[in-house]
Image 1 (cartoon, rainbow, N blue to C red):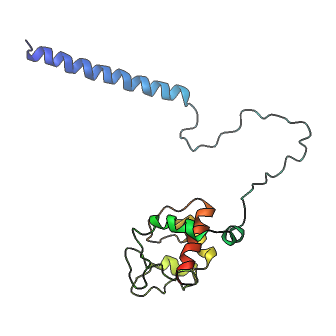
Image 2 (cartoon, one colour):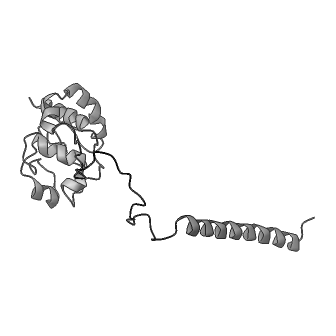
Image 3 (cartoon, rainbow, N blue to C red):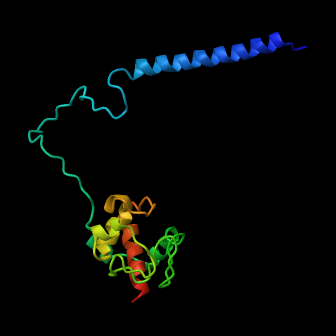
Length: 175
């Protein structure tokens, strides 16, 4: 039924088909993405639309939302308790029980390297003296951006309301 020559023809046909698809993909890529080189290249704008009465042509004002102090003043500790589940895989709430990260009981207002029995990375000690709500907010937003070289592998919490609620919950634990 099948001999070696038939099997060789089938494998050759599959390889030839794969080669045609690869060359077709390469050709299409060179046609549609010509010029420059990579995705990160800056290109000049092809055209701009003139708008009547647009004589200022100046800076664009970006609304960054409310300040953290305002959001923190309205924070809900009960909501923060639900957000705690993201943290408990590495941290504990009981004083002295360190995990992968230091315990977080009494963390708000505490000195950065004050958790007993935990070896902090030098990156955290260099950027802040105490864990104020503002410092915790910046750290929870982007740990690697706040303290480059930190050992914390968490990617960060994007919503300012979530960060404020979590910090309010942590602050409510130790009265």
